Length: 140
Image (cartoon, rainbow, N blue to C red; front, top):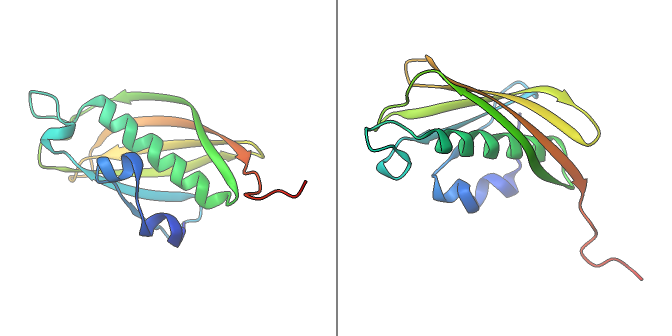
């Protein structure tokens, strides 16, 4: 999937706070992102917190939906995860969003979060709701 130049050129919000980097893929139904496990997103015993994993997944699914549906606001309405192994302090989490269903107003994504060795750390599903953006200066 190609990233919109507008989004990838100026990260903001959680993308900037968590230092998430997005990576285009050759498959139009996938998008990849990486995030390093730093002390800011780690639990006291040196592994990435589940909340940080969820934030990475929801942001990735949101960006992926925005790439597929320009002109729409994307709102995450459901997220579910099972964490199966840790991302250790200093490691980089590699997340891949895989489109399960592209409807007119709903996108369903499966996010596979892996450690640098390629082992599954978490599998996450995200549902996004799409709303057509209003014109900035609608005529009256």
